[in-house]
Amino acid sequence: SAVISQKPSRDICQRGTSLTIQCQVDSQVTMMFWYRQQPGQSLTLIATANQGSEATYESGFVIDKFPISRPNLTFSTLTVSNMSPEDSSIYLCSLTGGVKDTQYFGPGTRLTVL
Amino acid sequence: SQELEQSPQSLIVQEGKNLTINCTSSKTLYGLYWYKQKYGEGLIFLMMLQKGGEEKSHEKITAKLDEKKQQSSLHITASQPSHAGIYLCGADMSYSNYQLIWGAGTKLIIKP
Image 1: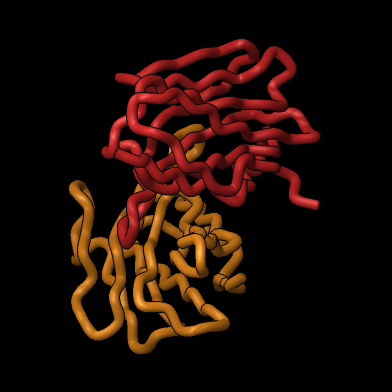
Image 2: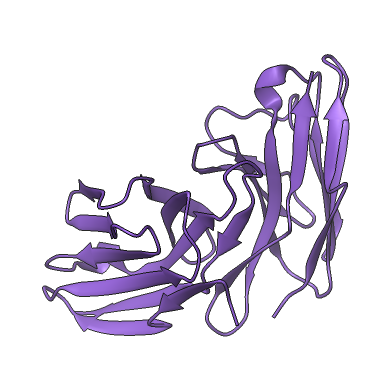
């Protein structure tokens, strides 16, 4: 199984600032996903990050607000830009892999915007 | 052992037949989420259950949370090829931390 780590695990940020979340995987994977889970709500896919190409964003999410980098097959970053309190959420990176196409999730980054 | 046990790990069902996937916890769940994933794609949210005894349906998929809020089942009636994929349950185990715990997933194959 894949081991995924995320940094930071949590942060409290001021409105208008930006935060970059890092996701590191212990094996090479082609596709990584970034999700958001707001309190009391379901997990929502933000974008799919493929190595060597631009990330694909879901409806309601744009690159200017959530720029993503994918410099290699084991690492990705998600930046939450110009934050507002509505961005307070848990952000998770994940990947699909293994024989059974299992979904693996990082531990999440809990973001609070004041 | 996993905090959230999902079964079965894989399932092959004849088209038109019914099937059930289970998700069991040893702790009280504050929220239980069912997701579906098709190969190479991200998760698609299906349903969220929060109250003991709650049941929700969408098209041919019904999800239930038991009264003790420790077990949930996802039932598909008259399965179709479009139902094929991986089904994942996720749970809030903590009332205030919004910490997510995930089942291992169930890979569903529909035979024509």
